[in-house]
Length: 375
Image (tube, rainbow, N blue to C red; front, side, top):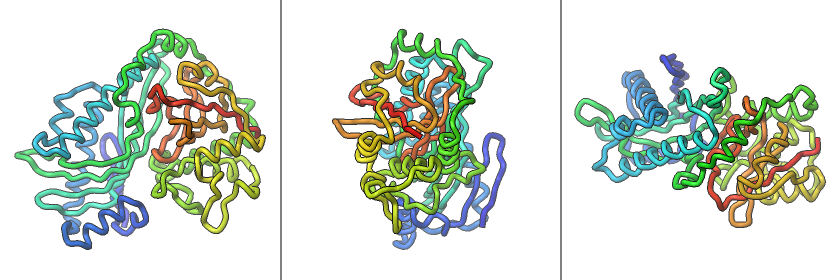
């Protein structure tokens, strides 16, 4: 059963319980229900719950956009530690988004979420929920207000909603936040960086070769929770999802190169019988393989300020490797450029769709590998 409800800001899709089996969060709630701690709610509550969830996410997005701390705080119960932690995390995220926008020379103009309720169960006086949330962030450059830009981030949430007086609050929430590594940082304000970014111009991609175009088409389709709604927020079901085993980013990049870009498998880089080789699924091994095999070459490596100018050399179908402590632990695929020619990326874990390449990676300890793929 699939019920689609159109609301003023978004589309909420309510799915039957069986749809989610196989995801880590889905298994968590399935097991909780079997243990008897959560009773599956009746269908008469569905419409009310869907509307309430949408309203709360709309309010939270409005708070993040407008830096409205009082509105944000009203969505949580400060006397419950899990709720307080969730609030404090969103408060840090609010600060980071606005620090990043100042560095970038942009203004956010809208934040809107599309929600897939993958499981909803009655819990005490409230509800326990498992959600897929696809959030679109809209922005404009401060000297180019007439040209809109946008990106999408997909997240998977486990949360509890409980009644408090005449309102509902979030008493517990967990999700993997793509901004988590950057929430404590203060060094993103830099006028020279801002001036460089604002001096950027749109990039002409009309001469992009066909293999690159097909590679980008592939990752656009299978960006999971961050993909456009017409693609139903899915990964390619022909491949194993490695997120429960540590991450699916290299697997996704490998799929792009093989399925979209036409690179043949070999003895080192391969996927067969439902499993990928180390070079196929491990971010560090993938990056080493691509460079040492000659299928790719390094454009630049270094901290953000060291590679920023070089990042404008990237093309759709190239990739960026993110290194921490001497080990590459994430791969993002370049899929386009925004109105200032700033590179945008897609990835799995966390799911991203045309996101500015440094957003969520502002930690000074991170080294960026900008890599040209030879199609």
